[in-house]
Length: 574
Image (cartoon, rainbow, N blue to C red; front, side):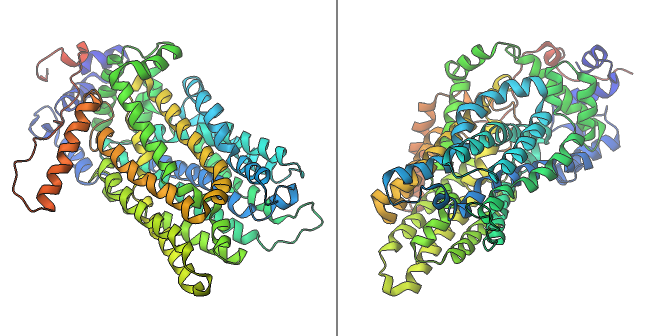
C-alpha cells in the first residue's frame, strides 16, 4: 500500500506505510502499534485543536482573505458611483432606456463572468494551476479598476471596462479561490476555511462603502463628470495589490500537482501546510488513491462536460450547486449591495446619509458572518440554509411593506425600512452568505471539480447580472413594496428547494460525498417531505411518533484501487 506508493515516487516508504494505515482506519490510530507516541499525539492534536495550523497555511488564509476583500470592494464601489456617473453619461433620465442602461452598466461584470470567466477558468486551472490563476486574476482586477477611473462620457466605455473586470478578474478568481482553499484545508476546518471567501467578501463590501463615503466630497478638479466617482471605482484595486504581493509565496495545491504527476512537489507542498509528517503522509496517500480511483482524470473537456449532466452523482451535485448559487442571488441580497444608496434615497435619505446607511449594511454583513465559523461545520450547510431562508423572507417583506408608512411618519418609516434590511442582512450573513461557496467547492468529484465549480459560479454570476440589470425597471414597475416582496417570496421557494434537493455535506471528506450525491433526488425529496411532517407532529402538535431512520449512513468511500485494498489490514514489517 503506502510503501508501494512511496517507492514508486521516491518518497519515504516507512512513513507512508504508517500514513496509509491511518488513512485506511482514521478513527483507530490510538490503537496502532506501528505509530510512535509523537505521531499519535499529532493526530490527536489535529482533532482537539483543528486551528493549530502551520504558517504556510495561515499565509494561504491571508491571501484568500485579500482576494475575497478585492471581490467585495469590486462589487460595491459602484453603489456610490451610481449617485454620480449616470448624469455625466446622460443615462439619468426617468425613462425606460436610462433605467435599462444603468442596469446594464452595473451588471456588466457579472454578465462577462457568466459568459466568459466561468468558461476560461477550467482550462486556465489545468494549464497554470490554482495559485497562478488567482495571481493573474488579481492583476487584471487592478488594471480594470484603474481603467474604470479614466473612462469618458460614453456609457459603453464603462460597460466594457467593467466587463473585462468580470471576465478576467472576478470570474476566474471566484471559481478558483474556493477550490484552492478546500484542497489545502484539513477536513476538520475545510468548511470554515473555505467560508473565509464569503466572510472577507463581506468585509470587502463594507470596505467598498468606506471608499464611497471617503471620496464623496472630493471636488471635480476640472475633470469631466467629477473626480469622486472615478476614485470610488478605482479604489477597489488597493486590496488586489496587497493580494498580488502575497500569492507568489503560497504553495500550490497538492491535488493539482499530483494530477500533473509532480508527486515530489505535492509532498513538499502538503508538508508545508500540515503540522506533522504523519498527517501530511496520510492526506497525500489518501488523495493519491482517490485520484487513481477517478478514471476520467484525463478525459477531454467535452466528455467531462457531458458527464456533469449524464452521470447521476455529478448531475445531483450540479443541481445542488445551481440551487445554492441561484438562491444566493434571488434571496435579494445584491439588490441591497448594489443599489442600497438609491434605495435609501428613495426612502428620503440625503445622499451622504444613504451611503452611511449602506455602510451599516456592509458592517452587519461582515460581523454576523463570524458565527458561521463555529456553526458551518457543527450544524451543517443545509441546516443553516433551512433556518435562515424563511426568516430572510419575513424581514424582506417587512422592509418592502414599510414603504407604505406615510411620509409624515418619517422617523418610523425610516426605522422600519432599516430594521427590515438590517435583520434580513444578519440572517443572510450566517446562512446563504457563507454556505454557497464552500458547498459549491466541495460537492463535485475530483475529475470534474474545477469544471463543475466554474459552471456553478457562472450560474451565480448570470443571475447576479439578471438581478443587477432588472432592478431599476423592477423598482419602477412594482414600486419598492412589490420589488422587495418579489425577492422575499423567493426565500420561501429557496427553503423548499434546499429541503428537497440539497444533501448535507458536513464533516465528510471531499471524496466521501460520492455515495451521498448518488442517491436519487426523488428518494431524497420524499424522505425530507416525510421528515418535515414528522417534525411538525413532534414539535408543534406535541405528538409522540416513531421517527424515520437516518437517510444517510456516513462511512468512508469504498474505493477499489489496488493500492487501497491490497491488504485487509495494515501490517508493519521490521
